[in-house]
Amino acid sequence: MKFTKITLLTICLSFLLCARSVTTKADNWDKKTTFTFSNSLEIPGSDGPIVLPAGTYVFKLLDSRSDRAIVQIFDKDETHLYATVLAITDFRRNPAGKTVITFAEGPEGAPVAIKTWFYPGENYGREFVYPKPRAVELAKSSNEAVLSTEANNNTPINSAQEPAAQALESAPVRAQKPSGEEVESGEIVIAQEPAPMVAQNALPKTASEMPLAALGGMLLIGLGLGLRLLSRKPS
Image 1: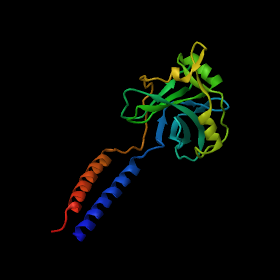
Image 2 (image 1 turned 60 degrees about the vertical axis):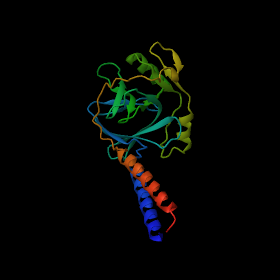
Image 3 (image 1 turned 60 degrees about the horizontal axis):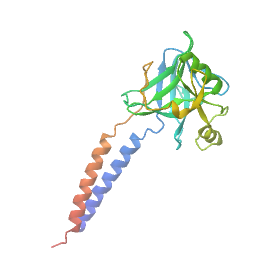
Image 4 (image 1 turned 90 degrees about the vertical axis):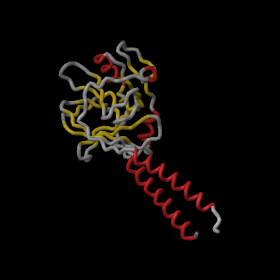
């Protein structure tokens, strides 16, 4: 019986270690995604619009526990940080199997401004917040409401615990409508299906949660059998 107990405990421990390993691989909390854009694009900048030429860029999140997101945009090698951008959680009813980015279009020939970013398979995405003066312009040119803030960030941010990151997370966010009216951000960030104006050449690093579910089931079965055997008295 002693040998059986040791064996069962070893098996259960092995299940736990395997489950922990799979959980770590599936935890893509920063949503790191590599994009290749064929046209120039605009991202929010604290001192005015930042226009990125056509090319490859890396988007990822800082580790934030608020209902907001801080998006950082790097070059393809992640050696140069172009911008640290405040974003608000957005929702879509039908998640796509690949990354989707939508844009607030301006005049013909002008760079398109990124509006939302949805990670593969997720209902919740990030809607970018623009400085108020630029948000007013984008709302009029695109005929769509654009999120806005009067907060600025001119310093690099390496952690969500830094004062600059916390200031962004707590900054008031409003929305600018094409009519020029300013409204609460919640009036436009609602359950709606954004149209993917531009498909993506994205290379997101994702991991399936199916192995974790299977291991979880096996773990429960193993624990049940183990408890049943351990509860039997030796004859």
